[in-house]
Image 1 (cartoon, helix red, strand yellow):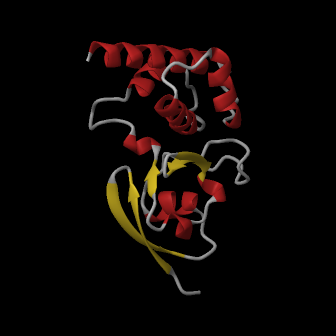
Image 2 (tube, helix red, strand yellow):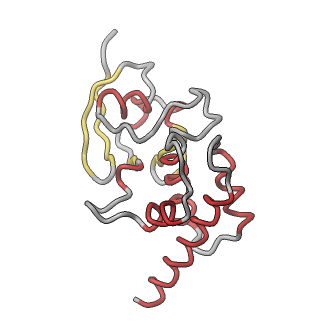
Length: 162
Protein backbone atom coordinates (compact mmCIF):
# COMPACT_ATOMS: atom_id res chain seq x y z
CA UNK A 1 0.00 0.00 0.00
CA UNK A 2 1.37 3.40 -0.95
CA UNK A 3 2.17 5.80 1.86
CA UNK A 4 0.73 9.27 2.18
CA UNK A 5 3.10 12.21 2.63
CA UNK A 6 1.88 14.60 5.34
CA UNK A 7 3.20 18.02 6.34
CA UNK A 8 1.83 19.31 9.61
CA UNK A 9 2.76 21.36 12.64
CA UNK A 10 3.31 19.56 15.93
CA UNK A 11 3.92 21.61 19.06
CA UNK A 12 4.87 24.58 16.91
CA UNK A 13 7.36 22.73 14.68
CA UNK A 14 6.82 21.79 11.05
CA UNK A 15 6.92 18.02 10.72
CA UNK A 16 6.76 15.73 7.69
CA UNK A 17 6.02 12.03 7.71
CA UNK A 18 4.73 9.24 5.50
CA UNK A 19 1.91 7.11 6.83
CA UNK A 20 -0.46 4.44 5.61
CA UNK A 21 -4.01 5.51 4.70
CA UNK A 22 -5.49 3.54 7.61
CA UNK A 23 -2.87 4.53 10.22
CA UNK A 24 -4.15 6.52 13.20
CA UNK A 25 -2.65 9.78 14.32
CA UNK A 26 -1.88 8.07 17.64
CA UNK A 27 0.24 5.45 15.86
CA UNK A 28 1.99 8.13 13.81
CA UNK A 29 2.80 10.19 16.89
CA UNK A 30 4.08 7.23 18.89
CA UNK A 31 5.64 4.93 16.30
CA UNK A 32 6.85 7.26 13.56
CA UNK A 33 7.62 10.47 15.47
CA UNK A 34 8.61 9.16 18.92
CA UNK A 35 6.05 11.33 20.73
CA UNK A 36 4.96 8.71 23.25
CA UNK A 37 3.04 10.94 25.66
CA UNK A 38 -0.33 10.06 24.15
CA UNK A 39 -1.24 6.53 25.21
CA UNK A 40 -3.54 3.94 23.70
CA UNK A 41 -5.92 3.00 26.45
CA UNK A 42 -8.95 1.75 24.58
CA UNK A 43 -8.51 2.42 20.85
CA UNK A 44 -12.16 3.49 20.61
CA UNK A 45 -12.12 7.10 21.88
CA UNK A 46 -13.67 6.23 25.23
CA UNK A 47 -10.80 6.79 27.69
CA UNK A 48 -9.05 10.03 26.63
CA UNK A 49 -5.52 8.66 27.20
CA UNK A 50 -4.58 9.60 23.63
CA UNK A 51 -5.96 13.17 23.77
CA UNK A 52 -4.28 15.84 21.64
CA UNK A 53 -5.54 19.06 20.13
CA UNK A 54 -6.02 19.36 16.40
CA UNK A 55 -6.33 22.98 15.29
CA UNK A 56 -7.15 23.81 18.92
CA UNK A 57 -9.93 21.23 19.19
CA UNK A 58 -9.59 18.40 21.70
CA UNK A 59 -9.63 15.02 19.93
CA UNK A 60 -8.81 11.40 20.64
CA UNK A 61 -5.85 10.68 18.37
CA UNK A 62 -6.90 7.02 18.13
CA UNK A 63 -9.96 8.19 16.15
CA UNK A 64 -8.11 10.50 13.72
CA UNK A 65 -6.18 9.22 10.74
CA UNK A 66 -2.59 10.38 10.43
CA UNK A 67 -3.34 11.58 6.90
CA UNK A 68 -6.02 13.93 8.25
CA UNK A 69 -3.32 16.01 9.94
CA UNK A 70 -2.17 17.44 6.60
CA UNK A 71 -1.76 21.21 6.98
CA UNK A 72 -3.13 21.23 10.50
CA UNK A 73 -1.71 22.12 13.92
CA UNK A 74 -1.35 19.39 16.53
CA UNK A 75 -0.50 19.95 20.19
CA UNK A 76 0.59 17.06 22.39
CA UNK A 77 1.59 16.77 26.03
CA UNK A 78 5.23 17.02 24.92
CA UNK A 79 4.53 20.63 23.93
CA UNK A 80 3.31 21.77 27.35
CA UNK A 81 6.64 22.41 29.06
CA UNK A 82 8.95 25.19 27.89
CA UNK A 83 12.28 23.39 27.96
CA UNK A 84 12.90 22.50 31.59
CA UNK A 85 10.13 24.84 32.81
CA UNK A 86 6.93 22.95 33.46
CA UNK A 87 3.59 24.33 32.37
CA UNK A 88 1.52 25.48 35.39
CA UNK A 89 -0.79 22.48 34.87
CA UNK A 90 2.14 20.08 35.14
CA UNK A 91 3.34 21.78 38.33
CA UNK A 92 -0.11 21.72 39.89
CA UNK A 93 -0.64 18.06 39.01
CA UNK A 94 2.56 17.33 40.92
CA UNK A 95 1.65 19.62 43.86
CA UNK A 96 -1.82 18.08 44.20
CA UNK A 97 -0.59 14.50 43.65
CA UNK A 98 -3.06 14.30 40.78
CA UNK A 99 -1.32 11.38 39.12
CA UNK A 100 -0.21 7.87 39.94
CA UNK A 101 0.57 5.35 37.19
CA UNK A 102 0.73 8.08 34.53
CA UNK A 103 -1.20 6.37 31.73
CA UNK A 104 -4.08 8.86 31.80
CA UNK A 105 -2.07 11.90 32.90
CA UNK A 106 -1.01 13.17 29.46
CA UNK A 107 -4.61 13.07 28.23
CA UNK A 108 -5.85 14.90 31.31
CA UNK A 109 -3.15 17.56 30.91
CA UNK A 110 -3.96 18.13 27.23
CA UNK A 111 -7.70 18.25 27.95
CA UNK A 112 -7.25 20.62 30.89
CA UNK A 113 -5.06 22.93 28.82
CA UNK A 114 -7.68 22.97 26.07
CA UNK A 115 -10.26 24.00 28.68
CA UNK A 116 -8.08 26.73 30.19
CA UNK A 117 -7.25 28.06 26.71
CA UNK A 118 -11.00 28.69 26.32
CA UNK A 119 -12.03 29.48 29.87
CA UNK A 120 -9.59 30.68 32.49
CA UNK A 121 -12.31 30.88 35.13
CA UNK A 122 -14.11 27.51 35.03
CA UNK A 123 -16.35 26.28 37.79
CA UNK A 124 -15.77 22.89 39.35
CA UNK A 125 -18.73 21.55 37.38
CA UNK A 126 -17.29 22.89 34.13
CA UNK A 127 -13.93 21.24 34.85
CA UNK A 128 -15.62 17.93 35.65
CA UNK A 129 -17.75 18.14 32.51
CA UNK A 130 -14.77 19.06 30.31
CA UNK A 131 -12.67 16.18 31.68
CA UNK A 132 -15.50 13.63 31.54
CA UNK A 133 -13.98 12.03 28.44
CA UNK A 134 -10.82 11.13 30.34
CA UNK A 135 -10.82 8.06 32.55
CA UNK A 136 -8.54 7.35 35.51
CA UNK A 137 -8.41 4.13 37.47
CA UNK A 138 -5.80 5.19 40.05
CA UNK A 139 -6.18 8.68 41.52
CA UNK A 140 -9.85 9.42 41.42
CA UNK A 141 -10.86 12.75 40.01
CA UNK A 142 -10.91 15.14 42.98
CA UNK A 143 -7.16 15.78 42.97
CA UNK A 144 -7.18 16.31 39.22
CA UNK A 145 -10.07 18.78 39.43
CA UNK A 146 -8.37 20.67 42.29
CA UNK A 147 -5.15 20.85 40.29
CA UNK A 148 -6.97 22.32 37.27
CA UNK A 149 -8.87 24.85 39.39
CA UNK A 150 -5.65 25.86 41.19
CA UNK A 151 -3.89 26.26 37.84
CA UNK A 152 -6.71 28.44 36.54
CA UNK A 153 -6.46 30.68 39.62
CA UNK A 154 -2.69 30.98 39.24
CA UNK A 155 -2.95 31.77 35.53
CA UNK A 156 -5.63 34.41 36.13
CA UNK A 157 -3.45 35.97 38.83
CA UNK A 158 -0.42 36.02 36.51
CA UNK A 159 -2.47 37.51 33.69
CA UNK A 160 -3.88 40.22 35.97
CA UNK A 161 -0.42 41.06 37.34
CA UNK A 162 0.99 41.54 33.82
